[in-house]
Each structure stands twice: as structure tokens, then as C-alpha cells.
Image (tube, rainbow, N blue to C red; front, side):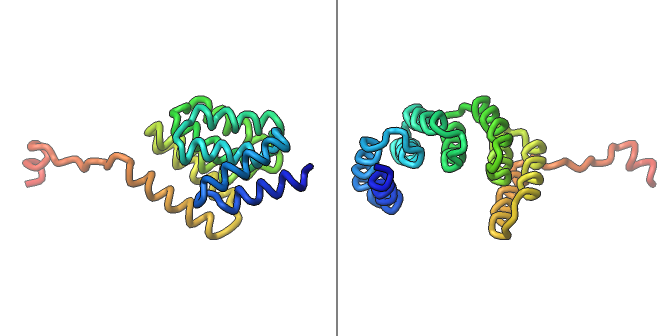
Length: 175
């Protein structure tokens, strides 16, 4: 049963996001064969979130996958993105904090997601703190380059510091 389910999951993954009809057909077969397959549940959640913009329904699929296996790392990023899109910031923060404690989770990705969370909340300094942590836990140059792009974007949103113009008294005293 596992091999058949995996074949359907692979077919769905191969076709995502280009042929959604094939994806949905393959996922239907995969989930009818094994309704607890975390990869199939995650991909179904992604279809609902990324293509249909039905965030609440997507969240249900992600939660089913996580209930089945908290170590289903493939769920983390798309679930967090969906929480952001649905503006469920408190839930996103709690989830990120929890999965940072899960052994084997990609800390660089999770700290970057936390930075993006604070960016969306317009807490830019706090976001930059988590950018620094993401870099600390990143172990490949390409991902560090991606983190730097995020950092530049966040820095670009920070309010500019205004230079003080000398007051009338200060300019007279200099003469």
C-alpha cells in the first residue's frame, strides 16, 4: 500500500504546480489509499493555500499532517506561509517557537520565517535579530544569499532617521 501511495504522491509532486488537474487526481488516489500520508496532506494543503486561496481549508490539511507526524518537516514552511497569508500571526509565532524545539527541524528556515513574521508586524529591528539567527544556522551559500535579500528588503522598510537641522540659536552661536 505504501508504494502505491508513494507513486501517486510522486506523480502529484512532479506535476505541481503546472498541471493541477493531474495533481488533484493523483492526490485523490493517494489519500484514498492512505488518508494519513503527510506528504499528500501537505501538498493538498499547498493547493488550497497557493492556488485556491482557501487558507482555512489548507490549514486543516496541514494540521492533519502534523497530527500524524510532528516530524513531517515538509509541512512547516507552507503551513507557516499560510498562517501569514491568513493573518494568523499569533498562531504562526507559537508554531514557529514550538517547531524550533523539534530535533532535526531546519532552524535557518524557521528563524527566517520568524523574521518575516516580525516584518509583517512592522517590528523591523526584531525582524533583523531573527535574520542574524537565520544566518547563524544556515550552512549553504545560496541560502545565506537568500537571507541577505530578505535582510535588505526589511532594512529598506525601516523608517529613515532624520538629520537634525541646527536651530537658529545654534547657527548664530557658530558665527
